[in-house]
Image 1 (cartoon, rainbow, N blue to C red):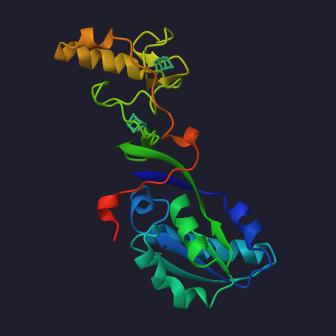
Image 2: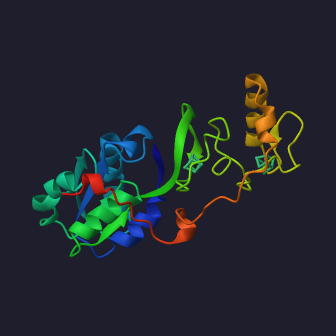
Image 3: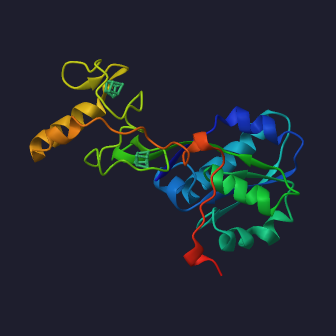
Length: 223
Ligand code: SF4
Ligand code: SF4
C-alpha cells in the first residue's frame, strides 16, 4: 500500500492563514489502511485544526468528507458541490490524490495534510516497511521475491556489499535486515545459490524515476 504520515499541525496551520472555510478530505483506501488519511483521521484532524487556528488568532470553519478513492476521477467529481462552498482544501490522500484534486479544482488551493512516504507493507501494528519503489523493471523473479532496489540501502543488484553485520543486518541500520543476506538464505533453502553467482546485467533504469516523468500506455484499454 501507499503509506503516508500526518504533516505537523503547525505546518498545516501556516498554510491555512487567511482562509475562512476549509474542507478536510480523506481517502478510504491506502491512507486509511495506514491510519493517516481515512475517515477516522479526517474527523480527528478537523477539530484539532479548528482549535489550532483559534489559538493562531485565525479561526476558520472546517468541514469534512472522505472519498472512496481520491485518485479516481469518478470519486473526485463527487466533491464538486462541496468545493464551491470552501476557499481551501486540506487533502489527507497520498500525493496522487492531492494532485487529482488540484487538477480538477484548479481554482481552489489544495494543501497536503500528509507526507507520502513509501510503498510499504505492514510488518506489525504501527510499523510499515518499504517493499517497492516502482522502479519500472521488476527484478523479483531473479531475486527470489525479495526486492534489492527498495530494501538495500545501495540498491545493488549483485550483492551483498560486504558490509553485512553479524546476524545478517544491514551496515547502515542494525534494525534492518540485509536484503542480500535474506536473498542468499532463501536461495540456499531452494538450492539456487549457483544462480546468484551469475553477474546480473545492468538494469534498465529508463522506466524508473531517473528516466523522467512516466506515462503508462495500455493500448488494449484505450477507447
Ligand atoms: S524490483 Fe522494482 S518494481 Fe520490483 S519490487 Fe523492487 S522496486 Fe518494485
Ligand atoms: S548490508 Fe546488505 S542491505 Fe545493507 S547496503 Fe549492504 S547489501 Fe545492501
